[in-house]
Image 1 (cartoon, rainbow, N blue to C red):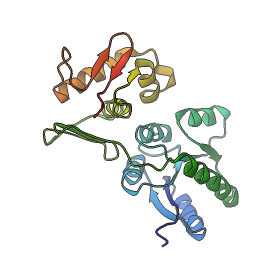
Image 2 (cartoon, rainbow, N blue to C red):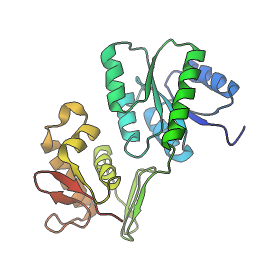
Image 3 (cartoon, rainbow, N blue to C red):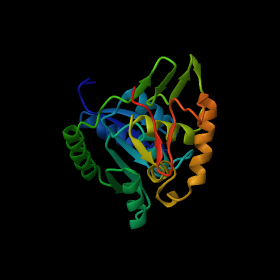
Image 4 (cartoon, one colour):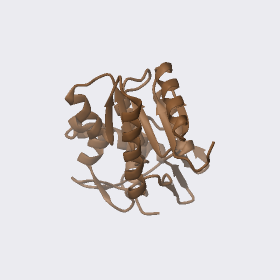
Length: 232
């Protein structure tokens, strides 16, 4: 295996599709990593730093759109979505969730390879294969790639939504992130007015981090606007 070859992560629950892509990608000189579930795929995305991700929408544990939204919390790696669903609405939903391209099954391997080459060129120009963000102030440590939060040496048990909100704030240190932006990116574009969801999650986050709402160290409120995480 050429260690400098582009790294492609395939997340698809169909063993036949994984084998097909594994053979085709390796024949073209790519390094390939395979995952059958969304959770396995996110783990490989964090540890293997792929240059491109091929992501199926219909996964057994989570919708591909949910996997993509979580991946986008800490990575801008190019993502090509695969699906048997060819409706325009599905394609729009994928692109709105952060996908770079969309291919409907069944597909031709040569067309897929051409699309991958375009995405890899775009990714290289945009510098999209960057190292995941980390935060560490000596008391609180947050690793977005590993999806870990460590408070005074102890792991903090966070739900997916709690970590998603925290990581979004961490990725914009010192800047106010609006309630609507958080709701759109974490819950989806149809939930931008469901501010009670966000209030509940922020309350639980503050409780788990021991962050006093009246004098917060990390989760600062900008009344009527949104929230801000301090610059490290």
